[in-house]
Image (tube, rainbow, N blue to C red):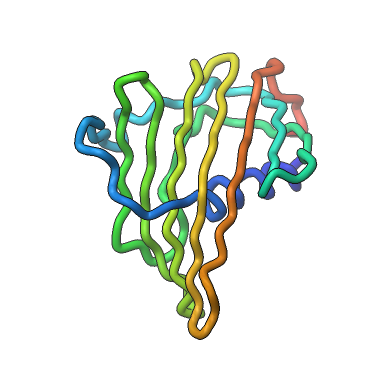
Amino acid sequence: MRSFWRVGAGVAAGALALGAASPPHLASLTPDEVPRLKAGLWRGQVSVDGGAPVIGNYCNHGDPVVKPPKGRCSHFEVRRAADGSIVTDSSCVDDSGVSASLHSVTSGDYATAYVQDGRTERTMALQPPLVTTAHMSFRYIGPCSKKGS
């Protein structure tokens, strides 16, 4: 279901955040060092702000487990924690002037399963900050269908 992946990708890229710099005990990763997901069909559950999970499938082509967020970002960093999890932090501004601080932690073997948790804090003029949290869990199902599921 392409719509599920759009929801999941949107949550992952835009609804996971904190904005505090990563602790110094994390090792920085270059784009080539970021783990890649096993290519194929993945089933996931996405829950935003503790709500009921949205469940769906998406076809992945071996993409990196985390990608830079879209938009103008003054800060984007990917690090590996001592436990092997991947930690991202970024600060971005969209075309309407809304700024967002993003933080996510992703863990798993990336061949059979992975989990991503995160927090986003958006700041708009004359508005209190809007905080969104997300929990996503995915498991590998098998090859993608010829339609690209």
